[in-house]
Length: 416
Image (cartoon, rainbow, N blue to C red):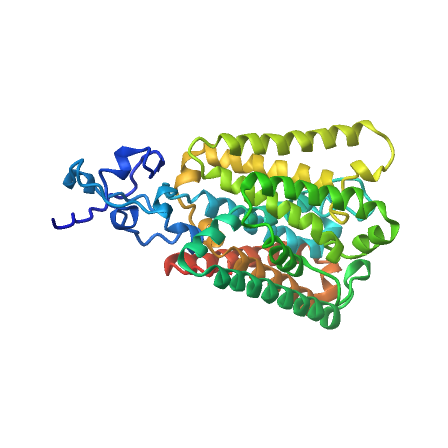
């Protein structure tokens, strides 16, 4: 008999349903999901997960009798229909936007309140920009596993690994090039930073590269692996004087500190996977465990006098306490987004556009920061520093949102 025509229903409000032999309402009365769902032109989130967040379902079940059961493949039996999830674009966009502004304000850190900047290398504290580092990595890691699986459904597994390996080396190369430009053409970077020292781009590249070893594990195994890696970094490497100093002198912990970053990535990716489940029960359990761990570290840190490394809170060391407290705060804000309907289901103008091309905007913000330092240099510390601060910050916000408008207007999305 002729196949039913597909009818597109915009913005349908429906619960998630899993297509399986145990769900006859879906699997017996409808065509396979690939034939029943017509993607729209929504440009939210990454290409890798947009196809499963369409919000358009056909009414093909009306044209099939109970005896006309289309074949169901193994892949379809594990597929879940989700509504579109702009929450990831909105949350990621806001985190990146605030990170760009705070990173720029570091030029004027002598004028900024201490709690807005990074805590010193030797201070037992967690400040706003320290949390921003974890939030930045976490929001990029939430969809890592999901995107990997989506690519693996469309391409050979070897091609997917080659893509992520190439992506990792691109960021490592760009990061070291950026660091070389900073140290040789701007100069005067604080704390003896030099060309071979890591920055966030190099760290992100190595973190992605080594996380590929674990990315196909089930979420609970990634949670365990991530926790073990953070524990090894905390109680082994930070317990050795030589490696502790190696981590300390390198802004992002260097190659030794990567262990903790990988652990953070694996935990965030597992929690991100749990978010897609129908009840989100495991998402809230995992988030609750992270928050409880962070709270325990905070209580111990406030209760015990003395700078004991086991409970020390510091971004430069990438201590376990710092990671769990910062991740707990990040997840807390994410849950707030999830509970507010328009933040969860509607694109925030301009902010969502930043989230869809997050790394591109972060690169733009970093380059703006570096160019301002290169052009003005020491004059930023002069008598008119307050005026320079206000003017440069307004320019940065205007440029960033202007580019975001262009991306939004022409539906541009650059996923790196």
